[in-house]
Image (cartoon, rainbow, N blue to C red; front, side):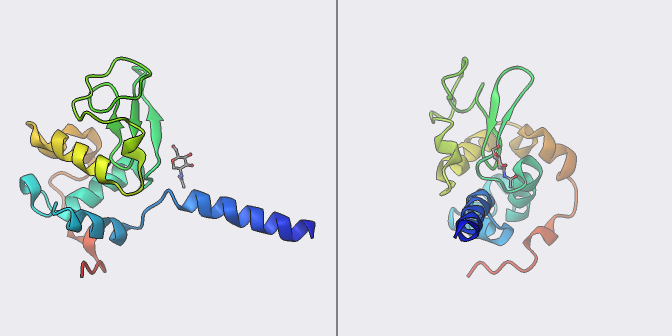
Length: 148
Ligand SMILES: *[C@@H]1O[C@H](CO)[C@@H](O)[C@H](O)[C@H]1NC(C)=O
C-alpha cells in the first residue's frame, strides 16, 4: 500500500516537473499559430534557438540576475524593463505581470517578446541569442516538426 502511494506520488512529481518543459515541435506549432515565422525578419528556427538558449524550453523558468531583477519564462523576460513582478522598480514596457509570462499558453510571453524584438536590435536584445544563435545555420531546429 505504502509503495503504491509512493510510486503514484513520485510519478505525480515527475509529471508536474515535466509539465514545465514544452517540446521543441510543440513550441514551433504555437509560434507558427501566432504567425511569428518572418516576424521582423526572424524565422521559427530563430525563435526555437532563442527559447533553447534562454530557458531550455522551460516555460516556468525564473532566474535572478546580479542586479536583483528576475528573468521570467521561456524567453527569460526581464522584470527591470519588460514585466512587473512587484519586487523592485520596473519600467514594465510590456504592461504585463511577470507571473502571466509564466502561463503555459505562452501568449503573454510571445506578445512581450514581440514588443522587445520590435525595438532596435531585434533578437540581439537577448545576449544569449546573439552569442549562440546569430549568424549560424539554424534550420535544423525545425527538423521533424510538422506544422500542419
Ligand atoms: C524549470 O524552471 C523552474 C523554475 O526556475 C525550476 O524549478 C524547474 O526545476 C525547471 N525544470 C526543469 C526540468 O529544469
